[in-house]
Length: 113
Image (cartoon, rainbow, N blue to C red; front, side):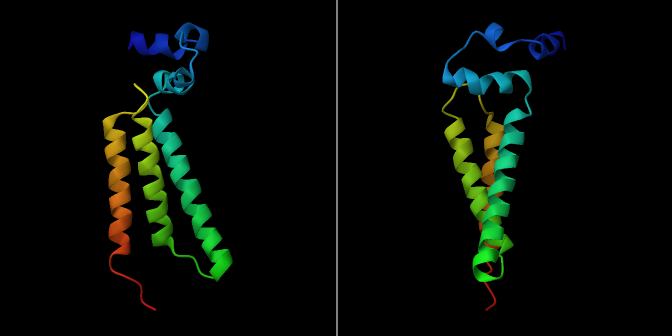
């Protein structure tokens, strides 16, 4: 618990990693929920933007396909994040890939047109 309190007050200069990877790993080091929250925000932004874009172009939006596109996007981003040491944990990557698989399973039954 004491280590968590010390990390919460650590400044970026005390973190002593001024590289680009340090810029991304610093918030993840301070708060473990930063990367999952960022991925959830990306998922939500991509899902709603594809849904409303499709609705604007065709008149109807398909939530299932928007969910699948956002799932694939976040899964790819989480896999890219694994290249930076200490940025993302394996459980978070597994959850992102699972969400992507759920999106594919939603698309499997087909469309009724």
